[in-house]
Length: 343
Figure 1: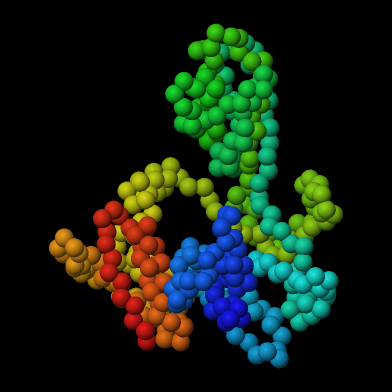
Figure 2: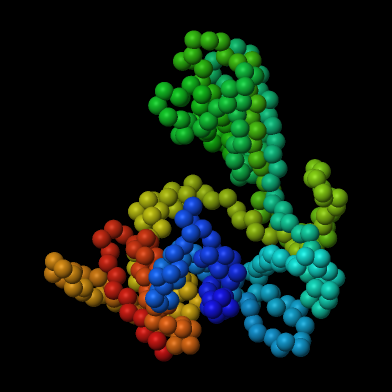
């Protein structure tokens, strides 16, 4: 029945609407259903799992007690407390005051980032090689938003320019803690532009952390529909800029690993965050029989709860989704043999 499908389909009403929606101009064929596997097959990529750190802060409460602090995350050793934002879709003509009783919800909130855009005007004076030095320290410069000359020609970074397009590009250089942009017009037959305007974004970085609630109460610029604002929580989240050695090491690791699971510990970590119904994981070396013989593989034993699944087809669906998930995050020619154990 329709109610039964809502009860066990992840995503609730949205999933049901997707199941019964038309795929292009052809409606879904429901006359040939034989088992729950026929329902799950077209929904293989429609599952959204909540991060473990997010759901770890949820705890059951009695129905007759106020749920204040229900979404406060549990303290994690070695990590700063975090706050999560939740979107609530109220019914039509719903009263916010009634919902706010006993809970304490702040409506009309938005996330503000420590970011400001500045513009720097540089006159070329007819020179064919132009350098534009940004006055802010390089660790406070987030990004170059745009570089446009007086002819309305937009320039891109040199590393993004394709072959034959280097004339409309600029080069970045770190000069004594300041960011310098170089523009070279020597290869052009026309005269250089009269001026160049560089728009860039800056931030205060870690210096803006730790501002107490209510201290920020002025808008930097006007926004439609926003008359006033104040910070509800202490400002946090900024981290120091990475050093050149850190960036080089990180890029080297990513190029070699490409964000893939390279060890058994990586595989276990990926699996445990894949589905909250997975209770424990064991990984070991194994062999797998194929049509052309045997081959080495990684044997994965996943323990799941018996009461968390309504049919064997639902367990098979989880195994197939998990297999594709691991294949996409493992080096080429890595094979998995997954065993689902219900406990």
